[in-house]
Image 1 (cartoon, rainbow, N blue to C red):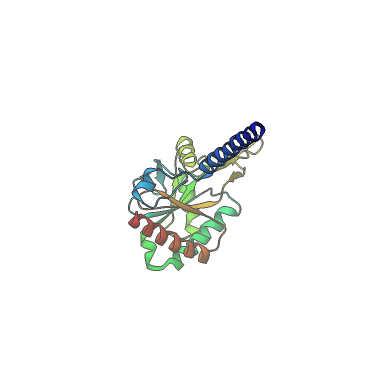
Image 2 (tube, rainbow, N blue to C red):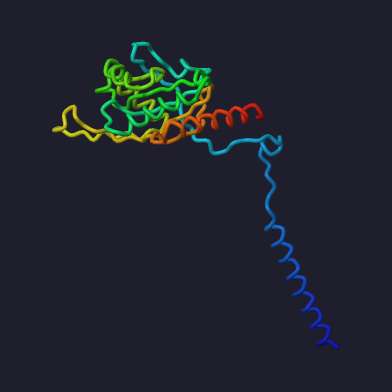
Length: 219
């Protein structure tokens, strides 16, 4: 009898331990409730939006000072490049020119900008002459090296001058080739590669501008 009682006691302790372990495992394996302010308020939010864009002061090809506030109220389509670029820049600007034609009456809501990454060579006069080959609505912007460095940093543009002592004024500039879309409040929306053709860019613009407007109206 004593042996049987001890055995029952041992088995009971083992069973109780197993049950306790199961309870602890079950409790800790449950997903935790989201307690952020967004969840509490039940509002739709976007997360992970990169911090692209910011204040800048540049000069247009006609000599006017241009800041990030100049075009408030309009969508901005921004491309960073330089006039001596052999293929990427003229291709992107030609595609933007086609997109503006395809975009139709809504083009008035959009301001395309071409910002140089090579201010040493791209003076106002050089840029003005270069842009004659593209849609007249594209505004060219240049500035001091410090001003260009600031704006490329804010837009996270990759720029690298492949310059040597022997190259003189004939040197290439490596740079990223994206078109940046900013909404009328100056907030970054999205990017598309400049090598996309005009039809694709026009379609993308309609989609981005429509979906962004709907999201902001619902938030």
